[in-house]
Image (tube, rainbow, N blue to C red; front, side, top):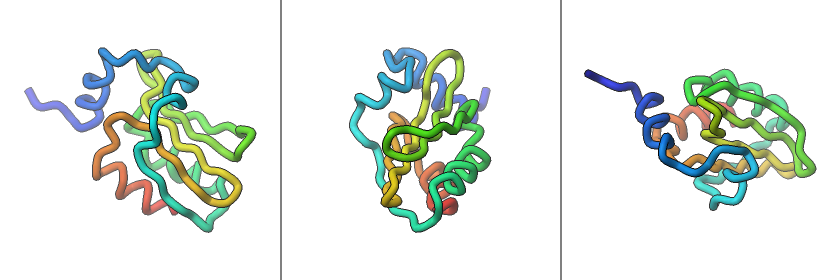
Length: 106
């Protein structure tokens, strides 16, 4: 039986205690990027191109814009873009394929 990257990602997180966006926010930043594009445009691109991570949810935060990907009751990945264009990613299993798709949105 072959499992896709997204399936392996979900399986890897199955035993993880991260269940909410607040819990994920407490974890160290996995990756950082810089963008000159408007945060809502980047957020929409991330939601569309990374939707295999889980169900995307875009929302405003005190610092800017966030995209959270959820599945099976867990927040699996969190992308936060602040007003100066800094994008911080918190995703325990942020692999190369997702990095390339993220860079394409910047």
